[in-house]
Length: 606
Image 1: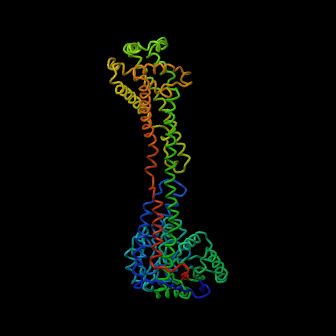
Image 2: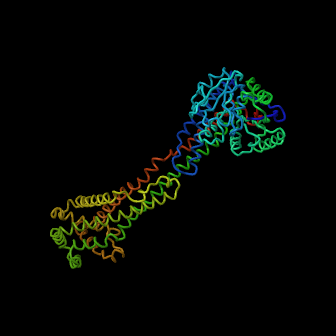
């Protein structure tokens, strides 16, 4: 059973300091509600458009901030601006067992909110108002996300509406869930309800007034400029002065020293669970004066409203920075992938230039295809008879041509598989080292696509056909090609492919010579005799460019396995700028509205 004694208040009768300036109701400036709601609506749209899909240290705080801002716009700022003269909403918050429900019941002289430690922790919050104000709260403009009920409910997202004849019009109490509830949803709802308050009535006890959770919320109230009043409940009479003094010091340290403080000593509750009138009289009288004074209520509303509006800008700026970080992270992830696959393209290009592809099987098949060493030694001396020798070699030995083509294909496919595997590993490692990338990875990304070998083989075959077509086009008007038909095109195309594997269009490097690829130079002589020197260089250059272009497309398809993930999660590049612009527009509209006096004027404290 709860015990209390006589009540006390902070020295000096608490009162609402009226702020000069524009008034609510019929005296409200005609332009006041024009630009500001529109600016807030635009800000809400910008917040809703901002996305934070990538796993960064700022992501969860940004998501929470975006949700909180949207809730405050929907629950409080927009509906309050639409009706500045609506009843003043006092949200009663505090820790578990602080006596919030008992206090609310006592202030409205009716048992409207379940009290006691055995009450269900999932109960709906209770809003108590005068019968004259019920229509405003029932229509749901304030806290529109909560379903109104006329009976207590354990369903989430409900608001229990109760009317109390003893409560004067113009004032309503909302008994919020415990701010330190063991139920996560209750704590979140308590924070949402407090953000929708015109005035916080914070209830704590002599045993718990220094707890960390209430002070975190009180600092949040101070940052938002919310009007706050404190109730220190269940204070032993012998400790009242000491505890009240200490709490006052703590409030002053947090720049809340002007907040009214009501001290309720221990006492017995009556049969209805209500506190004695003499205990609650100072607090009841204060609220009665507030309810009767429209100008005083307006001052409280303006203080909280102005504070909430002023607090938007820094929070939105943090949100914009988080949005920029998302874009920067997505760009960084893309760059790591692109760098890995650019390196793979360079490796292929280098592999075509450094002679490595002319070793082994390709070299053996080329030598077998073109003829004996004696043929090459006599090639330059007998250049006049070259065409006949080439034709004889080609027309008489079709099998070596097929073997050479197969060897070329095998060498290229091996190179492509190697560079694709290395690129996939590098891209995977680069993402794994980034918090956002690590969250997007799947094990199969560490390796090339399962069908890469088949696609690489198809690429090489298509390239080889392209080389043959290139030879047909380049040599179509030459008697040599016309006379020797398909064999000549095939032989010439194979020689061009071999030339692509040699550095700088058949000019051999030391590595190529060491690899025994001087035969490529002989192939050059063959082609020069048929097409001419410049044509040879053009053929090799075009064939190499065609191959690299095809390789680039293949590797781009491989990179897309990574890039498609960032593309699906990529936020809009201008979301940070849009948030900043919207916040600036709100500030401009706030100053133009005429609703709020300059900050240098006296601060409102109830």
